[in-house]
Length: 377
Length: 243
Image 1 (cartoon, rainbow over the protein chains, first blue to last red):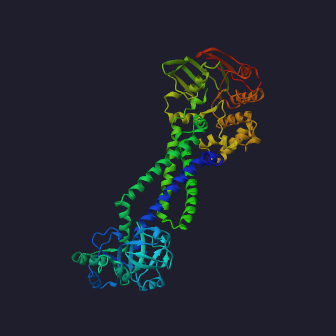
Image 2: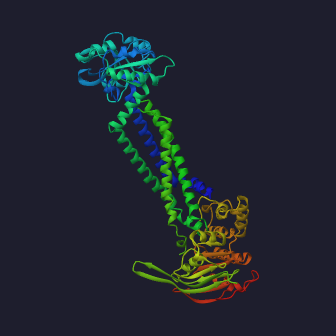
Image 3: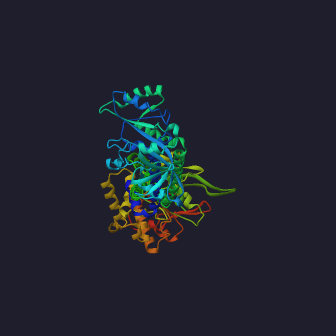
């Protein structure tokens, strides 16, 4: 009886292939949407995730890095006073207006002013000591390799940023952020580029590295208390990156749109899979009626169909995984912002299996209407 | 003692405003070791009678008693169990699973019956031998002729060693030679297994091999007589009472 389900699947694979493909493409769509969403939203946290440091200090209530506002200069002193703090580094963040070649017009950019020191924490995972050292030259900037075309410039070219001439000294991957082009420069150059005289001496963030073995949570709590009195807030790096991603996911409507799309994919997947499975099952309805006449119970026959749905799901997941891996590799070569993790993959596989099993339950409805007496004519 | 007794069964089909009375107050009793042929033109109600006697269709009134049990007082599950343990079917369409070999087709009901795999296999092989298809055990339906497929269907019904075997137009899709083979097989099942075999047909050629012939028309029994099979020297014949 168990053999009936599998033997039929293997022998009549052409009948079941459409259902397996429906499952596979539902899975592929779900996984790609998830990977793209994770990729886009985690790029919101690129400033944090690509940098070293344990704590971030910034303007109270800041949801995402690009929403930062200047904080008082003395914040650095308050941070340094804590015994657990090993290193404090300012991070300047400001809006910029980029003018490349005439025909490209203007581009809105984010300017990140970072420490060019070899042990600098900001963008430590993206920029090596060699690139940081290049930033010491006044007016030099680094851009993301994927943004070079958009800016209309090459390495060694000059452009106008906030009315001042800057020179592109390097293009590296991994600087791309959500919502705009990221231009990295030194703190001194950022200061020089800042057109707002009132905030020129202030920076948006300080990054803090703690002594090895220090309790990050405890330090955060101490500094938060201190910050309440001196107009700054402190987050752990993980929390700040998470805040940025969840801000984009839940506060901007983009996340809701994603959930909405995912539900549509699931519903469409169930409809198509159950219809194709239904057709495959219905073609054997006389044989099932015959088995019922011979005394096989309806629940036993339903199990045959559910088992078929299970295997259709497994084959669908396998095909979907192979396609996903192929597309991931393709996307990775094209700088598409996708993030793939095991949890997302397992969740998608579970959702897709539930598409197959729900479809199996729907298709098993054929069995409820089995009338073996109709075999007599 | 009769194995199957029907008392005053009636059945009416309703299709929109039209009511068709297919069976009118039919009573009969059937003996084991006999092949009973129910003959009649289409629309005479013979297939409906078979469905009601075999526990597939509930009559509007009357009762069916098989092996002393009132069939239509049973729940659907109990009725399925009764059919599983006691009843075999051979239908006009062969209703074989395309994916299964002849041996697997025959083994399938035995597995539902709970037989261990090797026992099911042995019994299925014996059944295939009984219908002369031992050598075809590993063939799929697509590789078999119509006559062979019908004999597989008979082997499938037979393997359970049922007390009842119901056949609906088993020869209609077959030529005369294959038709004769099938009816011989049904006859043998009645004799050698002591089964009550009921065969519905409009093929009057079968009359020569039946033990008893019931003629139907317009939902009534018109005639009930001994068939040519009684005279056939197949085996010791137990003459049953005629209702």
